[in-house]
Structure formats: structure tokens, C-alpha cells
Image (cartoon, rainbow, N blue to C red; front, side):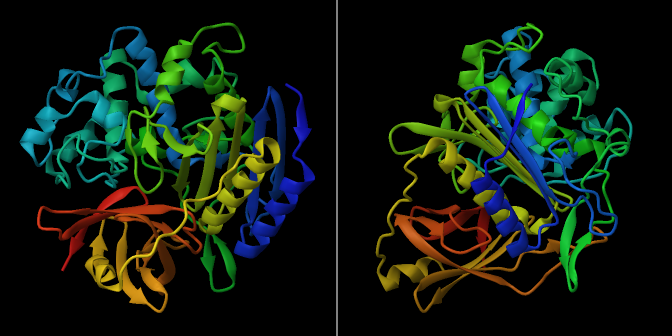
Length: 454
């Protein structure tokens, strides 16, 4: 595979964004009309620096969910899994705090973030092959936020369930399933779930902001329990190999058919309305609609002080991945991805215009909204509604602290729908849900339903 340098205009944006947000390292790659462009910038670790290259290993975080869904769709094609079947058809002892919701849960709900139970659930259930079985069993105490199948609420826990279904159906452990069915056929020899395999190569270490600049995160290994949602370690070049497969006809480079083309397109189709992070959701993929009928099919990830972006525009045979090794990479990864998309595709991406909302109505939204990872306060500011993000953040030793609140302005783009106007969440959207009396029940922040609390 011939790899061309990333165009200078994108490289300049990458360097400027890294300097602006103190991101130590970044790797990016693009595939467009079968041509691959890639480059690395900065260093792997501020304390023990090596130059980042296009082959440097990064933790990609939640884009890992799409690998789980891809393997699941292979088994759907084989007639071994039915998206419309109850989860209990495969995991007979599946339980949640709400028995009616657990009984009603379909496989489709799991892979489209429509399960409705607490999704940011993280437990280390050990290093054994039973890690997924154990964490799914612990979900018996997981409370329901919204009823099954009613609305999009981003869920890590749902993909632990998906991974466990794969194990039950195949009789293999999860990591072997993805290696055998995806990594190996696609030639992704810089991709693994195992830190001990990555560590013998050039690997990026996550960083968090410290008083003197970026500080390396002192933990790297992720619990095996969360692997189906978060644990792929990969390079930018391997990520565009994966993207090229999803843009193609389902055939691996060696000629083996891994999925039918119609299954790939189905995964990328808008099956349900999204919210916050996307306009719609397919089978694991998040979808944004652009003017002219063009869709961005995407995912992103955040884990251990590393943030990534992954997006495809199937109508234009285009994909881009941006990998960063810093908690401050949220804005830069998207700015670089936007610059690459504009360079290659020149798409009209004019955001929806803001609309005026009466001052009296703004008071309806003010208050506090809580999720497992988030503590969001909405207040009236001089120019309208502002959000104070008082969520905890990870520090270098892996623990979490509550820093000074991040303040961001909100602009309304429709009834109960706002766009965030300032970094680090600039351009992202939030939605609000009211009850029958008109009272605001919850807001969707970072894709998660966060109930309003007194």
C-alpha cells in the first residue's frame, strides 16, 4: 500500500492545534479514492519522547464498538444472531434492575444505544476469560434511566452485552473473535487488545493537563471487561485499512468476503434518531447529515488520556482518522478531521442558524443535570443560556478530581435543541425532553441522557 504525505494544509492545522491545547502527539491518516495519506506529529510521551509516526500505537477508545458490531453483523449474516431477538435468547440470565426492560431488550437495542439503562458502567472483573460474563452479571443492579427502545442514550455497557453475545454464540473469547474475524483478514498487524503486545512497539502514552504542562497517565492497561466497548489499540494506518473495508464491498485484501456490501451499508444507515453526538444512529455507527444528502458516518473515542476521531463519507470514498495522546485532544482531533474533510471534499457544512428564544423560556432549562460521568449546570448568562461543566476529570495517577467549571455558551437551533458555541465541546449538540406538563425531565449531554436533579 503506497502511503503519501498528509497535505501541508492539514499538517499545519495539526501542529497549530497541538500547540494551542498542549497535545504532545497526534497521528492522522486519510483514505480518499483508494489513495492513502498519513503523518505523525509530536512525541509519544513527554517524559520518554519518541517521535510519533503513522504506525505508532494509540488507544482508540470507543471506536472499538464498531469492531464489536462488525463481528456481530458477520454472525447475523451467518444466521447465528438475530437483531430482532431478545438478548435473553443468547444470554439466558440477563438481568437489569428493571425486569420489564431486561425482558424487552432486543439485540438491536444494544447495538444502537437504545437500551436505556445506565451506560457508563465500569468494573474490573479480573483478567480471566470470564471477564465479560462477570460484568454482564453485575448489571443486574443497573438502574434504568429511560424505557428500553425509546431514545438514544450512548452506552458503553450495552457493548459489553454485545461482546458477551459473541462469546456465547461462537464459543470463543472476545479478543480472539475480533482478531480472527477482522484484524487478521484485513492485515491490521498494528492492532491488538493486549497492552503487552503493543508495548514492544512504538506506543503513545496518554496525558492529562498538569500544572506544568501535560503529564503522562500512570495507568495504561484497561480491564478486560470493557474490551468490547473501548480497548482496541491501533495505528492510524491500520485504522484506514479498517475504513477502506467499511467503504468497500466487504472483501478483505486477500479476497476473503467478510461481510456483504448490503450489510456494511445497513450498518451505516440511519436506523433511529440520534442526539448530542450525532443526527442518527446505525448499527454502532453515528451519522451526521450534511446539505445535499451527504452523510458523515463516524465514531470517536476517549480512554486513558487518549482521544480519537474516525469518520467516513461513503458517497465520496473518503475516510479519516485522527489519534491523539492527550485528554486535551477533544477539540484538536475534530479540528484536524474537519480540515482534512474540507481539503479533500469541499463539502458545504454550514451549521444550522441560531434562533431566538424568549427570556422566560430560558428559565425552563436552567438547573442541574447529572449522569455517571457528568455534572452539568445550566444558567442564564449575559447573552443567553450557558453551561457550566463541573464533571470530574482524570488526573495522572488515574483518579478523578473536580476542576474549576468549564463555561460554554449555548445557542438554540430548534425547540429544545441547542448547539455548544465554545470549546472544548464546540459544535456539539444537546437536546431536552419534557414531561406531559411541560417540565424539562432530562438533557442529552455528550450523547447520554442526564436526568434533571433538584
